[in-house]
Image (tube, rainbow, N blue to C red; front, side, top):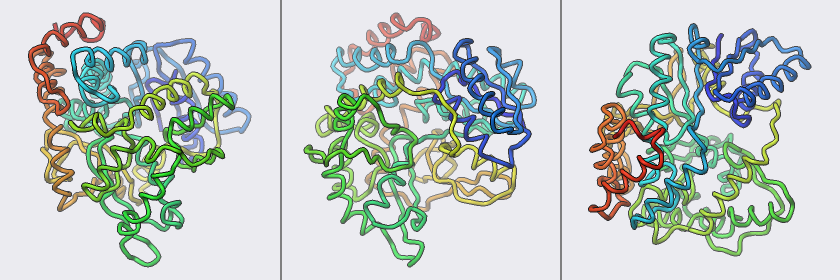
Length: 452
């Protein structure tokens, strides 16, 4: 098989994905093409990977290239994990400039005004990659890790509806970290299904495999005590400042056992999460920083200190990440590939695909995050006959934003970008929105200039 990893110069992504591929005996003999525009970072990742493969006598070959076109032909699997420009500098602009215009956003990465500008900036670049894939590797499976996930998947599949383009996210792993502790049962004893929009999803079904009984009543009764006193990101940041090391949180399925005392702050990182549980009787699969980007009342109830400390911790963890290969598997792509190409059957907990009645309350024009059955060499998303009405209404409030974002990218019309902001639930101002868009185009002209 041939894998092409686009964005492989990122040590966290490149080495992580390479490590996972190397755990699969089914994939022995595969060639892995590493692609990135940063030559120095790319060669560093390749050197570490080649040493790892040589020391263990693993049957894989590796090539590097700054030109993806030279590598895509004949690809079976393409994995995309990119950012454009200086990530945190641009993120800070996405977050703070809309705040100057009175938009109360709590995070500014995937939803809200910040998410709109992030999507307008990165999606055109991913569309260019997909243009090349459609021409050079039309039958390849394409897995995307870049955010804003829903905006990207919606736009790509609107232009290329038959492309095997699948969005992957780490947030579903939170269930594996917390539910065994809450329910006092191994994760393997739980049958779980969650669905919604990316970073805006809730657990819908939970059963104990050994007894077949519904586990959701136990979750609703036991989870509040757990989350009320669970250490939050402010606690972890304090731990890092004292010990000089940052734990891996994103994509981790292991318990964060750092010897941290229970948080003195009630529902740390989850004061909005708490409202979802109490008002809708549903367990979210992510924390306030992500949830709060999509809901108009989030600013009132979200844990703002926890969100700011999470942002600081995230930057710190990336800057101190030790580039290395590992022998255990962390991501889910290789398992999917083994299932599809090896004709193995299992249930994949979360993929992002264009809605085709999988969540009936949501329009077919946007991507949704749902589980899927991997069987008969296919990924078959699971359909939900019913979706909780209350939470579904929150999701519908945001789907128009994604629809307009896709149109803005595909048509290059600035008016759709303005209308996407005006449709956004957290935007409660109108007259200054055109000026805000013009300012962001001016500040980020390299990436947003196509709108002018």
